[in-house]
Amino acid sequence: MAQAELRKTRSYYINSAVALGIIALFHFLPPVSTLTRTGMDVAGIFIGVIYAFSTVDIIWPALLGIVLLGTTELYTMTGAFAAAFGGDTWLFILFILTFAAIINDSGVSTIIANWMVSRKFSRGKPWVISWLLLTTSYIVAALVSVTPGVIIPWAILYTMCEHYGYKKHDKYPTVMVIGITLAAMMGNTAFPFKSLALMVQKSLTNLTGETISFAAFTVLAVVLSYSVVLVYLLLCRFIFRPDVSAIRSSDYVYEGDTKMTRYQRRILLLLVLFFVLLFAPGILPDSVPGIALLNTVGKTGTCVLLLCLAGFFASKETGRPCIDLAKEMTNGIPWPTMMLLAFALLMTSSITNEATGIQPFLKSLFEPVFGAAPNPVVFIFLVCAAQLILTNVFANMVVALLLVPLVCTYAPMVGVSNLMMCVCICVLVNVSLFLPSASPFAALMHGNSDWVTSKEIYKYIGITLIFVLIVTTVICATLGSVLF
Image 1 (cartoon, rainbow, N blue to C red):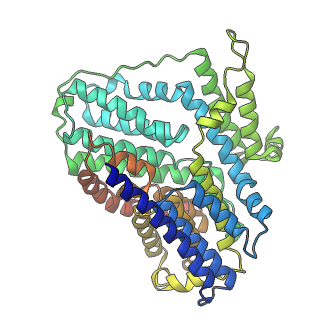
Image 2 (image 1 turned 45 degrees about the vertical axis):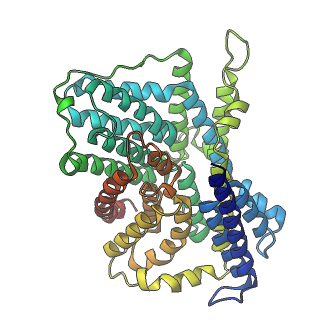
Image 3 (image 1 turned 180 degrees about the vertical axis):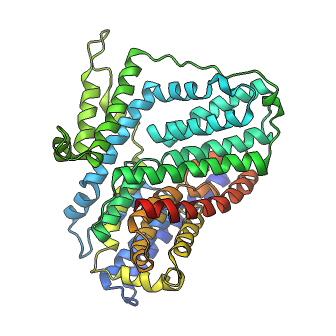
């Protein structure tokens, strides 16, 4: 045990030294190709910090990256921190995650999940039950976050398996554990106000000045992401073919608590109000009463006002607010993700700055791949393939950060919409479950060794990726071209 801990400690310091060495090396290397002196520094900071993200930690490398970018010619130190933490995107995500934590802690997500999977029409219908489980995971992740979208349906699945007589590592619970995780990852891409989606939209605006309509984003993202869920379900039904005779011969229907308290109904009402207020300005004209005001307040202001409303209500028993906003912000916000996002937002602005010469360098580097695409469909196929490969090795936010500038460079050359491809990126970089390093939830699933092995994950996810590539290419080339 002591030797293992020593090896881990040694590895930590070695990888930290490698990350710092990469940053130092680029600082002293002469400029290459179109890269300027500042561009070399920015490239070194990017590669070094990304290496540290993958091997060491998230928080201190992200903060170090922000400080180092503040020493370049692009920013002052104050300017770097203001751009990283003071922008509307970062603040909006901070408050929306607080709102999601309130919903999760209220138990509303559990009530929704219990209601979904307890439908009596599913009795004795294994693929209807499977569809309900995956759809539940998708909806909970879309409305709240990936964590309850995975953990709650997993718990429901385990209970179901006990009643049906399935044992751990039987094929049906194995494919469903994987499917629930995949469905939750996809649900997290359904709306344009999730953290990665907002980062991609910010990067797109920095590069091209274009913005994506919330309504158009949601339509394409929901179709793409839910199609991935349905593709997996069809693969389970017709290719993986687990034994579902125990479900077919049973009259068992899952029963869970579906009755909401007054407090939970109030939280659910706030959730509905949240969606209405965020989507209304993008759908209704300013002439509609209240829309001009919502545009003035903005997304961040709207979210903060809803948090104020949530904190306003007092408990009759204590006479104090029902919701402890300080506690929700302390415990409900994934600060490593927020630090990574702050670095990513700042790095996006840095990469797209003409003073670095990075964009022309990337264009020349990837010209043989994307520049050779003879038509839009081939280009879409190549970009989708690149996303699915890279996101199953590297963190999805890193992959998105790399791909957005490339897409915005090459998409117009072949007649493909930048906006459509950015929505595609938001969805496909979340199909990241093949390797444990691909995402925190891939690591969670690989670590669930009581129910699934890594070998089984490689097998089922590997096959799924091939079909996902085909289906998403077709959807982007058809529906995506109509919407954008």
